[in-house]
Length: 213
Image 1 (cartoon, one colour):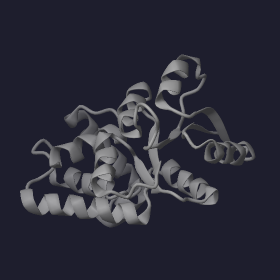
Image 2: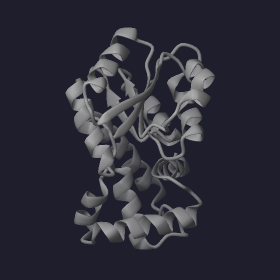
Image 3: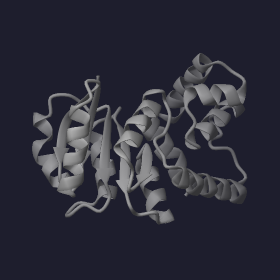
Image 4: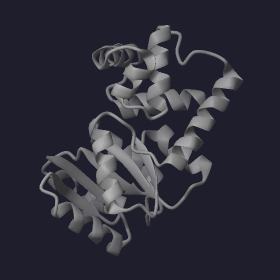
């Protein structure tokens, strides 16, 4: 069972999500709110931690960008995905740097959402192709400017794993690119977590991108 949380101020869109997910026996909507304030007021009554949270950026009151940090603090292992019509490069970069695991541009079909959830289940990042190009371009530009490893604490292979992870590859895809097993990828990530003092993929990506900004 996949647990899902929704924070979206468009009542029609939020209802569409709720109805679609309730028809799926593999998905359980654990909360659905119109604002971060509403989430904060009810967070202690939420029974199960969500596996994934879909969050709008243009929310009334506390913005979705501010909400990324709030939700990551509440749920350490939750995958947080931005749903937005905003394709501004700086906004996208801020969202990912703050710890969002993905960014999808509206409009996005409900079937596409279901398909992308499967990608997250398999260790991938939930990012629109257009967004991926923006992020990869930004990362590459920063790399060209600095010409230095992600961290001197990491081995060359661990840096290779991080680069592929930041680019949105799943563990299996990273394994294929680097010519190693998925188990070895997982072992490298455990070592990286320990060396950099992080506890989740979202925290790792946020730390790497913040260091490059």
